[in-house]
Length: 404
Image 1 (cartoon, rainbow, N blue to C red):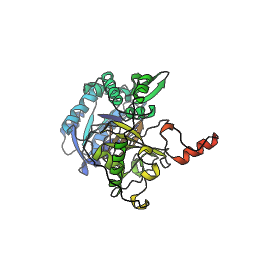
Image 2: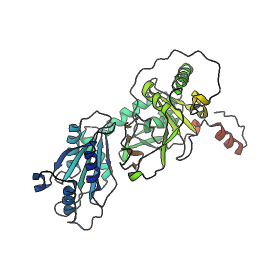
Image 3: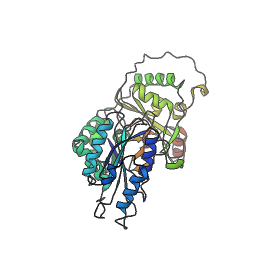
Image 4: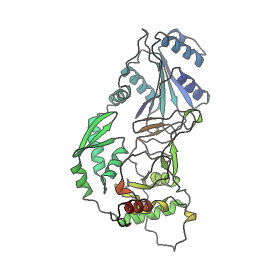
């Protein structure tokens, strides 16, 4: 479950935004509370709600941004509109907005059910609702409502990551980043952060012990290569940048990469592709997370990045090879931290390593659009761009051969 508090606003544009969704039959007004005598009237217009909220907010001239606009979203269709409305109501109470005038609007035009919340930060006495550590408290309150014990969950997530086979610390970090954690190396242990605070830690010795057990599965890699070759014929393998949508069509910087092929591999056989690269520049490498076999592979173990993203029709013809027997079970992908947003007019906003985007996947998410999370790691051991390796070694007067 994801909760997002949108950027501050001096006006109640959230009412207009959600009203437009309702008019386009992409949203549904679920609840109107604490608007006093206004609620007894029929055929209310959006401006009526805006006028009421503005009148309440004018009781405090010191507050520049009186609007509260928040979103609570679930993974896919795991919660109904009624359940999300009940969750949002309890969340507002926990955040101190239970007695405030508010609107709850359910959005049904994306792959993730979610509800928008619009209220004012000014109470009836002209005082501002407490917003100290608001983004952290937002998750604390939601987790309490969902009966999620954050300390117990981090133990479960660590055990899950350690059940995978991986060959580098960076790969271990990727597994946890895909579950929404930020990791910081402190001495001989990794500290794990989520929901704005440290949730746990793990000794590097445990990670290294797991790395020492890694054995490359040649047969599985051959199988994955055959599967990749099969699906690249009808699915574009070219890596394309992904950007968080901005209001009014404004341009935004790329935050990651995806491809049609990567999307198909994730959905059909449970193989997640994570491209590595600086925003605005072509990816220089990639990592495969094989959730079916619980193994992480360096991309170059499958094929070089240039080959992986090159369209099939442009590749030189090769003699036909026997294709290994392929089984393609449907699996549950390890979730990542991301939801997609309305691609046209929902604001995109980064919070730490999470980005609000509303479109069809969930990445607390592997999205149906093939989104992969932005992972900012030092993955020198995982680079498989031979040009980069060669250039770096030449500077150090070393041989150009990769000896890692």
